[in-house]
Amino acid sequence: MSSSESSRVYIHEVSVRDGFQIEPEFIPTEQKIALINALSRTGVAKIEVTSFTSPKAIPGLADAEAVMCRIDRVPGVQYAALVPNMRGCERALACKVDEVNMVMSASQSHNMANLRMTSGQSLDQFAEIARAVDGKAFLNASLSTAFGCPFEGDVPLARVLDIVDRFADIGMQGVTLCDTTGVANPRQVSEVCQVVRDRWPGLVFTAHFHNTRGMGLANALAALRAGIDRFDASLGGLGGCPFAPGASGNVCTEDLVHMFNAMGYASGVDLEGLLELARLLPAMVKHDIPGQVVKAGPSTRRYPLPGGQGNARQAASPSCR
Ligand code: COA
Ligand code: ZN
Image (cartoon, rainbow, N blue to C red):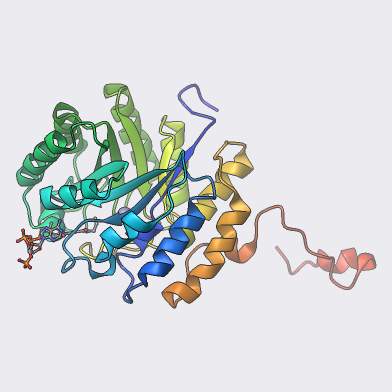
């Protein structure tokens, strides 16, 4: 472990927001509530329960109030909601969220596609929201497309730093760096995370990766090694932004926890409990899920030797490499 690296990692479960927002079929409210209640007991530090967005933009989360107000809250777990504007903030505060997680994009064009606002308009909303929250909830800002944009390509680090500077001025307590369409690579993640950690030691940073190109776990590890110890992740690897072409699932919670646990980091999360819930997902979303450990089993899984004990030679047949 390097000196900047933490041995404790915090897992933020986002499947019920980032995952369910992109599912073609509406997940019934009761099923969402039951899943959140079960996730609350797995040891995750935070659950992003829903988003208070326009139901026309995100019909899958049109039941935000019902879900947020009816879940059982487990002490020690933070219950967050994504908020795009002042109206969303008012709705979230009425449901007594623990965290208002504002969202905007580092790139202007994704901000327009996702929120129909310029970056400046979003920042103005954030300032207004920060005044309205005024200590009633933790203030977090999620910065989408922080590592690249599906419309513009590269997003200069200077732009990310300028926006985080504005977040700090506005009074944000936490910032989540989001790789919305899975374009980040571990070297880039390492650089960006180190710079922000050094520049704003008082801000709580979270990493939010999508596994669109198979770099999700490598990116999470790069972020951890650069001193970030909080990770958004999604049960089963569900997820994606409906307004980002080519978006697909988040880094998978049970795969991430499996990796961290295997490496000796303390996640506080019960992997078996997560796997049990992940097994329920295909029936809930009516399709296969990208998570891998739920299919392969943990790395501690052992199989009986084929043909019984005397057949060890056959088990190591030369055709298996
Ligand atoms: N909650 C509920 N309804 C809202 C709302 C909110 N936070 N904000 C706006 N609306 C409603 C308005 O009342 C209006 O309703 P009406 O057509 O019945 O009069 C409608 O949405 C349009 O309002 P407007 O202010 O013109 O917003 P818009 O159409 O420019 O959309 C957003 C702006 C931000 C509301 C919308 O783009 C949005 O919700 N985006 C969410 C994006 C998202 O969650 N992406 C995935 C996560 S990264
Ligand atoms: Zn996301």
